[in-house]
Image: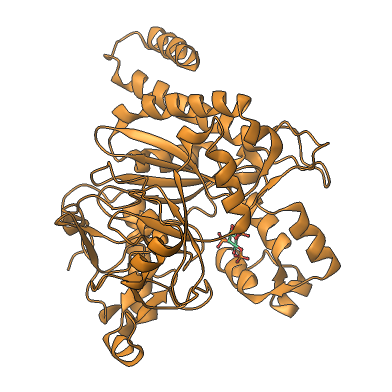
Length: 446
Ligand code: I3P
């Protein structure tokens, strides 16, 4: 099956990256991917419908448990083990990671499923950027992909279109405060906890952010100049823990990056890895980075670890827009509304926001942005004030969140200005066109 529809047009950047990944996967994984069948072509993917997310019904305590008990528990929740999933008797993974498109590849293994009486979802990391199967929701089929976040932390909700996120007490605290804060319209609605009958971990039930979209494009951008907590840093100093997995991820990108000692240990500490990740991406310089993008044709990519310059980011944003450039002003408007609300939000004034993302979602007719992921968002000591903009020094808790928001707005505005300039009727007077373009850009900044 062809990876991409045959056409005379050149492959886009994302298609080239995906093709490279598929070729590598074919070599590396061999039979693994064949057990899942051939990956769907974007042509097939584009026949997909909505991605179901959170419907939102309170499910605390007994009622939640009774609904959960009807579900088939399929796997461990440990993010380092195989993927957990609550299945509805369909051969699909319905976890939120998958819904949001942060994945790698999930395949179902019939033999495992039969042996373990589980769905046998098996995770193959970093092989291809779409899943080899389709979910069915409201009689629509769509490819199951995922963009970012810890694998295994999310489950499909007990009712179609709901999502459960593994409970993190700090994140729950944030959601509770956010539900009373001015930021409430910009975060998924928190519907309470859901507990399983057999003592399985408790989940947070969150609003489905994609349910109103048809074949949505989804992008996850992690905001802030720092992605680790000060406490992670101090713990690592007290008791350095070497991470082989992080060393492996590091050399995959740049074999020269580790020091001689790190090469000898074949391991690095987490803060060392996190700081390195920040500097190879746009986190350290622009205060945000792209974690993953899923396009409306069903293809997705997480290959943005070295996307650092404004130009690289603009290219990625254009891929994300997938031709829906009419959506740009809505994203700019929403980002400005978020910035204005952050300025008056008590939550924002009293919290250090680390590792939190903005989720961009659009289809051909509408678009929105939400603040998501608050597991590393911490209440500041009462006497401490941060402006989310000043440079971070150990102890001052600055997160650079507003640096990221400002740069996101600027970059979207620059893209809009460039598109407007391109759309202007061509003129023989090049100098006049240049001046008009500059004026257009300035106007768009207003
Ligand atoms: C991961 C990313 C995550 C981080 C995770 C890293 O690196 O930085 O934000 O989780 O740490 O492995 P990458 O994106 O390069 O894969 P936290 O933000 O929750 O710390 P982990 O492996 O300790 O979960």
